[in-house]
Length: 261
DNA sequence: ATGGTAGACCTTCTA
Image 1 (cartoon, rainbow, N blue to C red):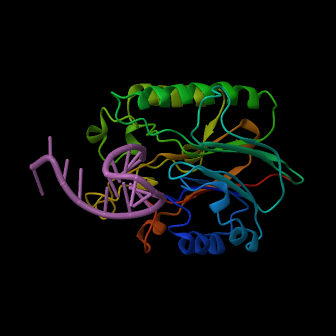
Image 2 (image 1 turned 120 degrees about the horizontal axis):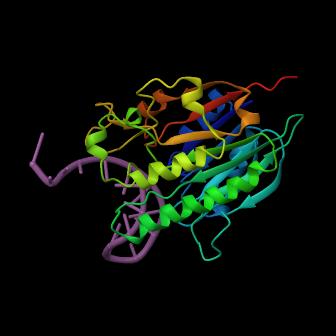
């Protein structure tokens, strides 16, 4: 089973690019972030034509997440528990049905900049809510994958120039500590487990020639429960997608899970 | 050098 995560930075602004990638990569499951549209504007039929079941948690202009699967999606949850007043569409979860069901959560973790604003507090609070929710999911003892744009640079090896990111919400000690706390619940970082070599970036800013200079960061992650991590056979960062026409600033990351028969 | 681009959309916010 191939599980993909991709922050598409508006699904409708680059629909041909996104659909083209789905045709060639053919993931079994995909988590999309920053779809930047309400549910009714999501191109559901286009993905259904490629054989996907589609669930969406959309929002006007900002954020928005979707979950796609070749097999039916069950036990669907839209929105992260822990704050009924939270209007931002950043979380979607479902069980991927099949002989070996897998629970998949797609997340678009808040950016948190500027750190002097309430946005940074919202980010850290959101991470605390995620930690609490994942703790409950792990108690189910199912294969579980939490995939998405975490907006966290876990380690110095995950950024072209760590010094340039000191003080940024993606690299602040509080953000990295919260990411570690999440992993310490018993989760495995797909990339560290499957490759781990420095320079496995997933995002390059549109500005300042970040892509041609390879000024990238690794912020799109899949965290795996023990039952899912045991089946991980590899991970691929689809770096070439960043060089295509009208690209997202993120590229797809695909984890391969090979469940024993 | 304190730059630069992209998307949604009402003029500025978010990233």
